[in-house]
Length: 471
Image (tube, rainbow, N blue to C red; front, side):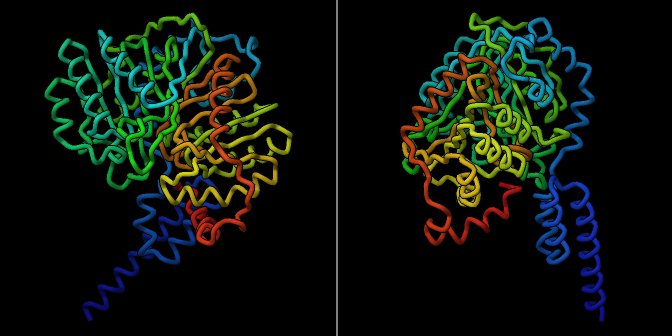
């Protein structure tokens, strides 16, 4: 009798919890489809659905947003550093208002950019900046390995610390979960400021592993900054036998956008440690002779709207003649999916460059469920053949160019913390377009429909698409 009562009580508690979770999902899910999916799953299989909802059901961080508001007065003072060099919007060929709202910052001129087209170029430039730093270095990676590249980075950071440079260093505890403790201990022993993953807040809580800080940032003295697709590991210089040649893009930044990039780093550091470092950083930008109008857009689950999705939507809808995009994963939300189809129907030259090589099976499979509709609308899908392609960049017409960390998927749109460097000038747009045109020569265009794919792709792609909200 006791066990019957206990099991009945447990069943009632489970159904009650599932009902509460279903109400929460109906109220807070990002899309109607997501709300329906969670409600049905929770009420039909609560034992399975409740743990899943605890991990995957949340989509915003109230605490993160509260922390940002609490620091707003200090942050506003730093954000205003760009006012003196704010770009006159009327002088640009594109309406930058959507991008400025998404970033919470103004487009500013006086910037310089240099495309870095592979791991060797990227890490050589980063090592040089670290070796020449005199005051401070900021380092943030999603994935960091204790291999050749990781140890080289460690050695140079320790050498910088020994000559008196202050260093703030953080990684994502999910992406860098295999980083050994002795690697971190060596940095700490050198006096480098680090975040202990064991005591991280918010998205690094055990029930929030669905949220990742996907940013890759290195800044030296507030004068030189780096962001883009490359994490720190040997595979990013083509030494992984599984992937071989690794095609990726990073960007070296100078000018006021470096201050915008370090503002994002300082906000992340404040959120994760409650330690403000704003007043310890250089907020006087050095103007680049390139004098490019640019902007850093940092997005994530702390945003009140889906800013990651809106950034790509804004670029696609702004395009009049072409929109070329490159991403290792393609699982767009309905807004970006519709914008791509509409651009194709408008006669815009729409090309999406994706890798042929499989990195993660689920998003690779899910992408096939989108291709037929896109191709029918005139969108060209190109599969890169020259190794694994991991870059995240786009060019719209000859007016907008973007390089950064955000993939064309729901995870980057709403679940991850991301960074994109945007430029509104024909010079960087042409450079990115020329780079992508070269990549297209190493790609084959997809002409087969889903019904013509191998049996396992035909069967599994529609099923994988059901997981699109978390891919």
